[in-house]
Image (cartoon, rainbow, N blue to C red; front, side, top):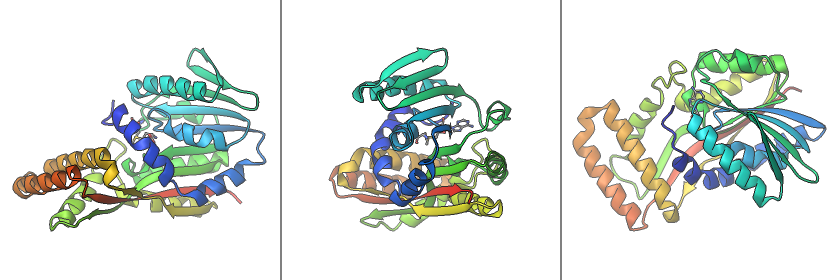
Length: 288
Ligand SMILES: C[S@@+](CC[C@H](N)C(=O)[O-])C[C@H]1O[C@@H](n2cnc3c(N)ncnc32)[C@H](O)[C@@H]1O
């Protein structure tokens, strides 16, 4: 089980979808065009947001493995995928762990796999994928884990599309004096071990890009920030609570100023007078 609640993933899904970098997506579509059938491995799939964005953009026949350690998210994902299919007039057929969604010109076979990616992923390694993908996962991982991921992708000759990796940049508007203190501590918290070994946090996307280049990949790394306006008050509030909690855990001495900062930020959000930028990167890589 992880700290990622389905409500939070639902809240962020529409903003994630519009924040993804269009050039990386265009390069992914271009790469996928000659492939009659595609096998895709989605790591840390949550409720399947990455599938819902990518599947309509790729070829007619797709085989997805959706991997997550959280059984509740996988189960919630199944329900969401069935609703998603119904809205697109696709038929849905469930057999054991595989859900097949089918329409006149499309067939998606989706296998939900419950697996902790911090432990051996031999079960995944037995079957090659054409595309390895993830969204909002990379910053949790470590250099050693990314090394292994890159190696495995290279052996499979798989393309790699990793979206929405946090890059350490946050910027509130209006600015408050303590914003920088919170950002520094939040980014330090990002680097604590999330089970994968010492987390790379904001350095993860560049680390993977370098590793893939060393392995002969052509790599594209592009910004995909969230630009949260006053109307995104629910998301701002959730981020604010999460960051305050993380900073408090890391630095219990921060209590007084942190409480005052959090209250002021909350007031601004409630008055619809707060905007927030959160930096991310999208990576697309393929072999020449
Ligand atoms: C921020 S969520 C992103 C979910 C989804 N990709 C999306 O974009 O909505 C991170 C996901 O990684 C999963 N995760 C975290 N650590 C994991 C691990 N050790 N093994 C498998 N999944 C993990 C969480 O359960 C969660 O679903």
